[in-house]
Amino acid sequence: MLTDEERKEIEEEIKHYPQKRGACIEALKVIQRHRNWVSDESIKDVAEMLEMTPDELDGVATFYNLVFRHPVGRH
Image 1 (cartoon, rainbow, N blue to C red):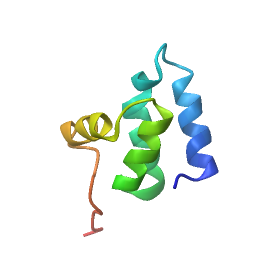
Image 2 (image 1 turned 90 degrees about the vertical axis):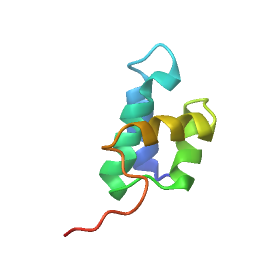
Image 3 (image 1 turned 90 degrees about the horizontal axis):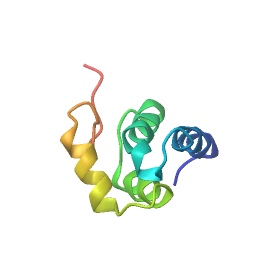
């Protein structure tokens, strides 16, 4: 479940695009900034906000190597 702060930041990003899905990379960055990685649950919640399927958003997330889909260690 996304926090209120995460939702608010994603909504702000959505305002910059003519279609909600245009904010997908920025939305993924928001989640990663807060959690250090992007979980399956986060993909599902963000996809719903962006009117995308989770598979579509996961495809974007896995395409970019700077979006971490698994927890990353510190060292």
